[in-house]
Length: 158
Image (tube, rainbow, N blue to C red; front, side):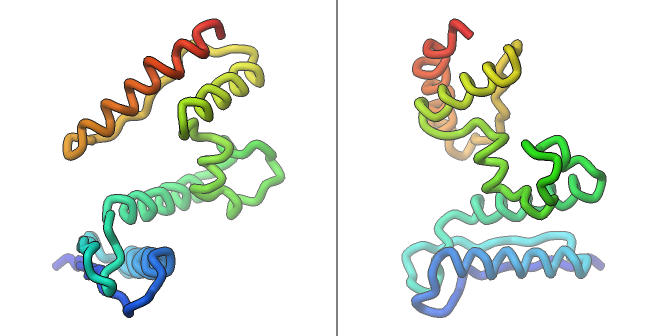
């Protein structure tokens, strides 16, 4: 028999969304440590007791933490660090967003790509990491359009 967990998005009335998400992530960590094989996350955003409007973001946070832990165990985090003396525990999703991922507005992405090109002395192709956005194709298409029509022309001479 395998164990799974369903997280109702129910929290005490008035619980901050950040605190609710952190609690749910802790529940997922404990379930993983105890050998649970699945976790389902409920979604309700109209009730003050259920402040989890986007379970996909909660799942993404849980996966990033899991992957970072896995990378740490196999010695892979060193490839993400801008300073080799940085402790592994400092490589968080926030750190990756600041130092590794090229995300943000067209202006921010343009700046980050230009900085990366300067730091490396050039590079070949910028790859987009895609996910299954079949549930919201308009948002993914919009992101690709911003990259193609606003960012690419600004960095075409790199």
